[in-house]
Length: 272
Picture 1 (tube, rainbow, N blue to C red):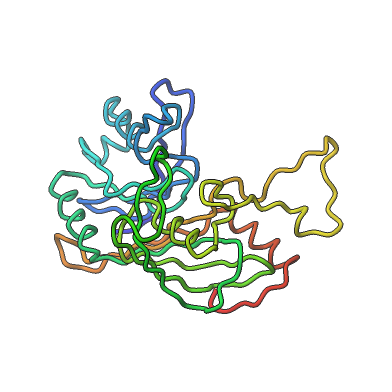
Picture 2: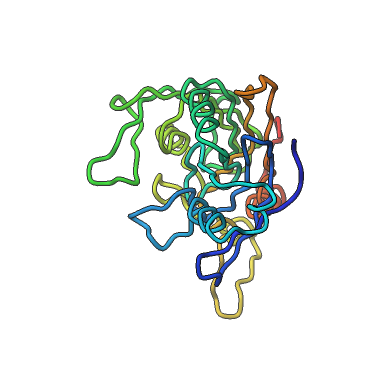
């Protein structure tokens, strides 16, 4: 069952709240549309960051209306999603659901699709990156693609080309931490706004010749985070066998950036 209903999650002190679109829901799973700057789980390295898991746990403890209506007493995440990455976040309504979806994801029996705006322009419209991904000593938040680590493969397809930038479809065939970001960095196509992997912020002043700054002389970036969005997930339902297809539309920041790129950067539309 799919729908366009929404869920509001509150912080434990109710000082902040966030509204999430429900992308998919049945008796086993709940998929939410995660905004950027929202973690899936709590991080000891960044204890002040809000996380979906904590917000959901708080909703269960206070027996929020949406929890009561669904008779939910457990929601466990199926996978982690980076703090700055927007898009599909899948949760499981019981342990068996989590185990079964974990088996599917672990065996790569699903199709995940991301979209990413990167610096640079690949020579080919479709290309694969096969490079192992491993940890960087002393830097727990950075992964490195190369000859050491675990096997990883990502397929990339050009959606749209701009002057100095490219919009890519990214299809990971394995599931490694920071796989897409590390693989893009490996082939010198760093994600826009991704300071951890060499990506610079996208500023309108760099695109528009007659750009006029604000009165105070400051300028906000068009995208203030890693320009990576998780837009598609397909899998065979582990209980019913039916095809499940979950989609998330591009968020406003990336949509606006594309609008300005199409206007001020020479582009060649291919498959977008």
